[in-house]
Image 1 (cartoon, rainbow, N blue to C red):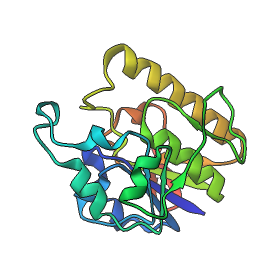
Image 2 (cartoon, rainbow, N blue to C red; image 1 turned 120 degrees about the vertical axis):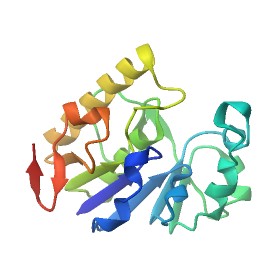
Image 3 (cartoon, helix red, strand yellow; image 1 turned 180 degrees about the vertical axis):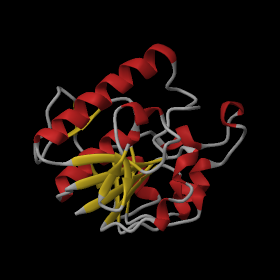
Length: 186
C-alpha cells in the first residue's frame, strides 16, 4: 500500500498529482488546495490562531475547512471542530516501531508516518516535510529531529517499508530516494 504523507512545506504543492492508496495530511496542509483522506494534528488548537510569528495566518480556519475521513489528535479540544476526532495515545520514539504504539518526536509528520505504518504501508512518500524554513525546527533542534527521522526510516526499513521523498526540495534528500512511480531515482 502506497501512502503519501503531506506536510506543510512548499514541496507538498503538487502531492495530489501522484497516485496513492491513502493520503495522510498534517495540520493545515489543505492550504495546497486538496483534501487528504486522514488528517493528523498534534498541537493544541491555539497554536494555529493568527499571530505575529506566523504572519497573522489563520491556520485554524484552514484546518477546520478540512474534511478528512479520519481526524487524529491527542488533545480533546479538537472535538469541538471534528466531532469524530480519534484521540491518540503517543509514546516517545525509542528507535523502534510496533503495531498499536504511535510514537512521536518534535514534528507532526513523524506521527503521520507511524499511522502509515499502522495502516499497512509498504511505501511511504513524504511531501512537504522539507525542514527548509520551518519556523520552530532549526539549528540544534533540526539536527536532533533529522537524527530521529533517520532512526525512524531505519526502523521502518527493518519492517520492509520503503520511505521516499516526493520532491528534491527537502533536506531529507540526503537520506531518502526520490519517488518516481515504483522506481527510486537517485
